[in-house]
Image 1 (cartoon, helix red, strand yellow):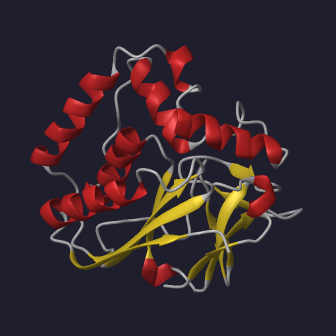
Image 2 (cartoon, helix red, strand yellow):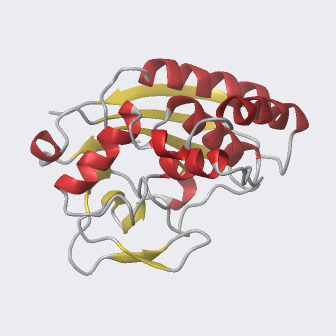
Length: 220
């Protein structure tokens, strides 16, 4: 699974790094033990004031990168910021399936946007770049998203994911057998290794994950 960063990030987001994890998995609809871990994290975050979230180093770095790309971070929130705000507002967290739930838990723990994708629906190599003029896709549970200047993941078929909202092309389902998880570290490599090891542990325990491989994609 070849993934690289577009060279323009050396100017737009010089600290950007991606933590990547690929694994063979068995995805279930729900797991109560996993959900108890998620609820513990929610309880620990629930008292945080919404106004404090934008100042978290990981969130602030992502918002800064969006601004440098010409994208309003208040309109196009990163997924980690959106999840943290949802918890602080007392809205709780939705259940999807075990791997997506793990994705959301890791985002709440690391404060980084995460994306998880079905490898069978991807056409490597993959590049993390800015969206081009006219590029759009339908976000999961959302309408058409204007991708111009938005940081995104694209393969040979075009964009399929972003820190704000992933597309409907490569979602994780209970039919997924090969999964790719990407931690988008706009604030740098600090915490990415720990996040990947936490991901390895969660996938092993709750998706019977095997053949797990982790790596970090750095700036050229």
